[in-house]
Length: 177
View 1 (spheres, one colour):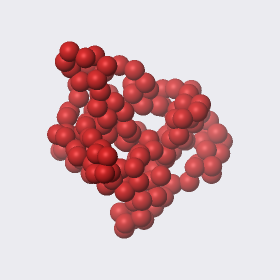
View 2 (cartoon, helix red, strand yellow; view 1 turned 120 degrees about the vertical axis):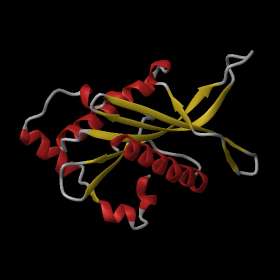
View 3 (tube, helix red, strand yellow; view 1 turned 90 degrees about the vertical axis):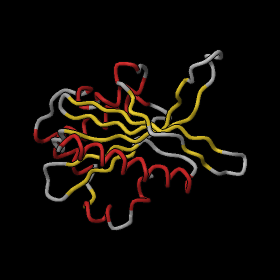
View 4 (cartoon, rainbow, N blue to C red; view 1 turned 30 degrees about the vertical axis):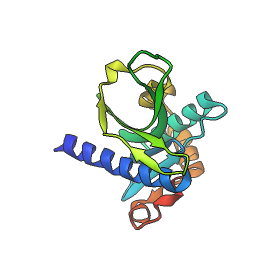
């Protein structure tokens, strides 16, 4: 049952990401996490342009401060396409799930035409042991930082307040970036 729920949420984030990409032309890497606090969904955009290590450390501290057990990350990246030319690649949207000992990666390739239209390929379940590179950092956000005391957690909760889940569901999803 839990595995099905994870898959459903991953597809939901994927569909939402496709709409954002079509409307905005880009996706800002974003963490979605349930917290033990009542009726709350944490939505945390991450800018990786400059200081990616610092941004990931802060994200890890925020996840720890809210005692998050599992989370999802939506991001864009490139797939290398197998074939004669190893430099060929395709853009894709990734949805990552990290929880306990379970890790999942769902990816969908896309192409953008000169007229601005997006065409999406088939959704792929990627075997985690087949990937390498910086995407692996997104699975280990909480492990990036040491345990925090309650005062440190309270400080981060003040700096990064959660949004009510109903606000997200009621159509204000465009505030993801």
